[in-house]
Length: 128
Image 1 (tube, rainbow, N blue to C red):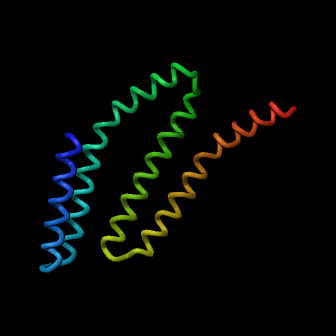
Image 2 (image 1 turned 180 degrees about the horizontal axis):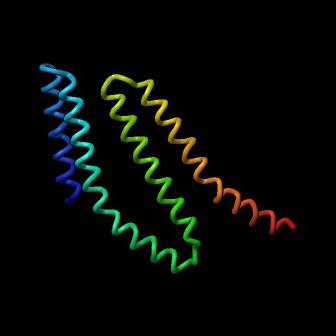
């Protein structure tokens, strides 16, 4: 599915959610969650292209597998944190959305520690 179709689907879901807020607000939130999940489903379909490109990059510059998996984990954590915090904000719980974003950032920092340590090892090797 292309970006135009996804954009139209998202705008349609938002317009329907706005209409439903007058009747029952929770229906609008459920519709927004369903639309977000459907868009995420189509986004997962694009992952094959990304994996193929990452494999080519890995072959070209001889990256270790662990660095590539960490990069993909970081992207996934970012996507899940943004999606869930956006849903919380739409439901009127901005404080919980902020906490999810903070937890996502801390998780990314924790996941990226092996890369940071490897970089420091390389820098220490140059300094010695």
